[in-house]
Image 1 (tube, rainbow, N blue to C red):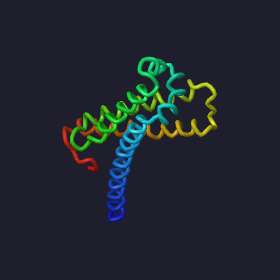
Image 2 (cartoon, one colour):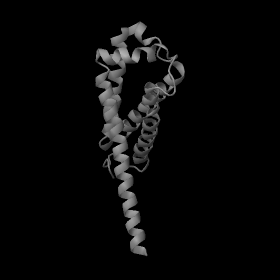
Image 3 (tube, rainbow, N blue to C red):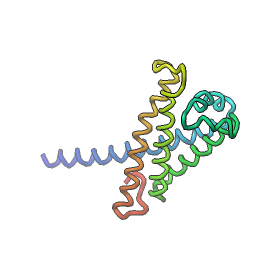
Image 4 (spheres, rainbow, N blue to C red):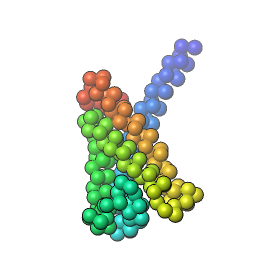
Length: 160
């Protein structure tokens, strides 16, 4: 019976590390891809109704213009992606990037309640609801990276 318990424990560790790595780096990849996409006219126009009706971002397009506001968000998303991906070398930077991602995702989720005419059954709402999963993965990644600091290991393998 000990063999089966040891085997299950080993697999649990492998799956936990693999799943965690996939969660962390997929959040980073999504932030990077959407960050780059924010520099396009299509995306700037797509997010304008969301930002213009947001109690947190309503000012963005007035100050920077539609494309400028989108570019600013895109720049922040790219920086966040790089920070999250730095886990192997700089766990504290990754933790801060993960927390920044969680904050950005919370703002994005607020669009569900601040955008007039956005039906909870629409494709746009479905697109935003997936951010709940990304929010959970971001919070997990922040906690895991902070745990590396707590254990006294400033640099630790990403999948360790």
